Length: 474
Image (cartoon, rainbow, N blue to C red; front, side):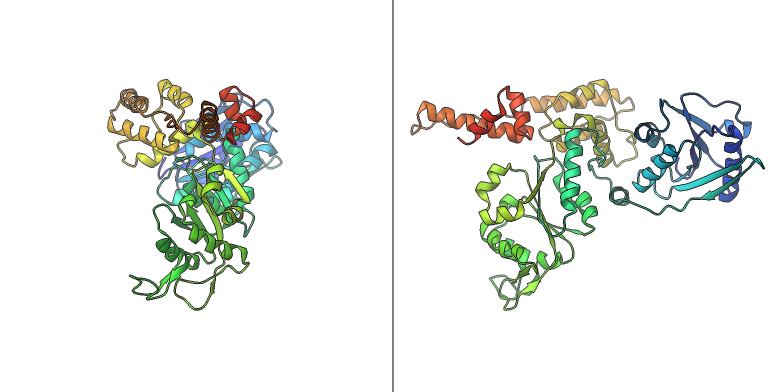
């Protein structure tokens, strides 16, 4: 549909096909070009008696609606059946007038949420029964939401596999709703948890960024000793330590007016954590660069992320620092708890990986593929999908069934050979009862980390949630 003008609208029931035909004529006159395609949405039946001029380029899509006044039903069908048809359209025109008031509202909601391609135009047609004339004017509707900003940000950069913010699964929808609420609170640190590969960093750098309306300044804490970490965060003056050949601004200064994101927070040296405590408890966020005599201030908001469970973070983080950063915490659920979103996740990962034109825009699909995606533990989460997509590309042929089967075979073989859970080392200093207590503690904590909640872990292990919590205390 690139470089083509496409009209999208409901079939007019009030004046039949006459309104559609006159709308097309007036729109083509305003655009000074012919429409390439007309996508006509029809409720429960098919249109008839279209004028030959538009019949050949009209594509009808039937939406089965028991009640055309139910906003949610209309919204779901348009999202699932219509949006995939127009996602790559560069000149989309929508006539928002035909249909029920609920249908009008859905168009505006989708537009405000950024669901349509960039530069989509909205039009209003009004039929005058006395004169049998139809007027057409463009609708000015500049209202946007944070959803729109997130989607626009994704369109403006190279495609990355970020979760669809209107998730279908309860676990992800609940998590993203909580993230929105927590990120909306100013000046309170936010802690984002989740297994490796769940997309924490991308979620923070897209969704949290849009909600807070602040740029995200990221620092990966892994592998940093205390001197380097302190210099990166606080900055330093020339001669402050060996190798400090000049002044350097720290990320606290760079993050002034922005959001400071500390990734892998469990790896931040405790000496630096304790210095950050003072900064966080001070409303002005005063800090002193290494080797400096004077303090500086920074208006930043803090977000931290970790793939470790809370029990582990409480062990490795300075207690005061942990208390400061964990007042608001949310968990990005693993893919195995969000099976309803797996089709969209697979498409998003495919969009990111398959940048070459030799691969189709639509992610390859098969019944075998989804059998594995809905049954596999997907312990690597998005990374598992990325690996599978790369394998499909490596074995790519015109018939998608062949590379899919081969890629799935290799993918499964590698996973079947991966190491399982390790058995704790036996100790001569522990009795049998003490070993069992240690094993059950490890089992309970591992189950909680893997399945996300005590309730889910207890269901999988077929035990009482209270028992599992008690086991975790050792």
